[in-house]
Image 1 (cartoon, each protein chain N blue to C red):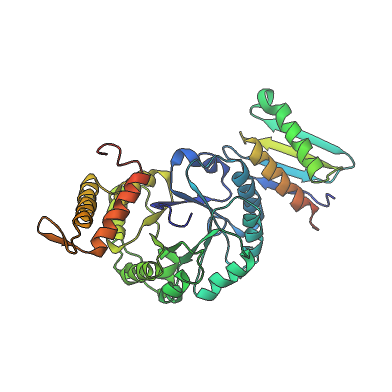
Image 2 (cartoon, chains in turn brown, yellow):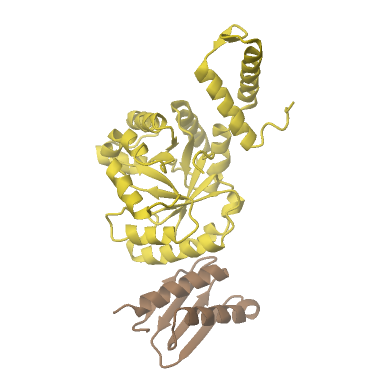
Length: 87
Length: 288
C-alpha cells in the first residue's frame, strides 16, 4: 500500500525520476523527451510494475531522460518500495 | 571460473545506469558493480535494485560479472548479499576484509553455492593477515588491494611514487601466491595521466600482480597491454616448451636452452604465458 510520497532516480542521461504518491485510483503520468516514440511503452512498463508489486491505488509520475526499459523497472520498483514504508 | 584472466577490474558506480549499459563494449576482464563507496547511504536501496535489474538485462559480453557489496557489519551488507545470491553474479568483492573470519562469515551466509570471492584488503590488519584471508576458503580466487583506505589507516600520505605502499603490495602478492590465487593492484585514480597509469601498472606486474583496479574505461587498453604477454615473451615461452618436449623425448634429466638451464619454475612460467596467450588469441599469428 502506498503510504507516502517517494521518489527514485536522477535527472541524468539514460535515467528517469519516478515519483509515487498516495491516491484513490491507479494513475500513471509519463513525461519523456521521446514521448511520441516511447510514451506508450513507458506507460505499459509502469502498469506492469504496478501489477507485479500489487499496487492498485497510487499515482506514478515518470519523468524520463532516455532510460532503457530495465532502468525504468528498477526505478519504479524502488520508488514504490520507498512509498510503501512508513513516513 | 577460478583462474580466468583478470587483468582489469573496472569499477562501475552501482547507481549509474548510463555506464552500465555499455559494459560489453568496454571489454574489461571483470567489472565491479559497486554498491559500497560509489553509493551514498540514502541511495543504497536504489543502487541495489538497479544492479539487480542490470544483472538480469545488461549484455556483459565476455566480462566477468562482479559486485562489491557493503561490509557485512553495516546495515546494507546482508541485503546486498541477498540480492547477489538471487542474481547471476560470478564474483563477490568483499571490502575492508581484515581476517579469515570475515571471509568465513561471508561463506557461512553463501552456503554451498559455487561463487567466486575476492576480498579487498584496505587496512594494516588486512595486509598482515593476507595469507590467512587468501586461504580461508577455496572460493577465494583473488586478493585486491585498496590503497586509499590503507594509507588513511596507517596514517601515511599517498604519493605518486607510492613508496608508502610497497611493503603492503608485496605482502598481498605473497599472501595470494602462497595460497595459489591471483592478486590485483589498487586503482590508479588520475584518469588523465596515462603515462602514470602505465608506469604504475608495469611496477605492479613486476611485483607479481595479475591485474589492476580501474575507475574509467579508457584505462582498460593500456592496462591490458601491460598484463598481456609480449611477442618476445611468447616466443621465448615456445622455445622453453619445445626444449622441454625434446628433452622428454630424449630422456634427458637436465634441460638447457642455449646457455641457460631451464628449471621447473621457468618451465611453469612458460606454460602459463602460452596458456594466457592462447586465451587472449595471441598465438594465432605464429602458430605452427
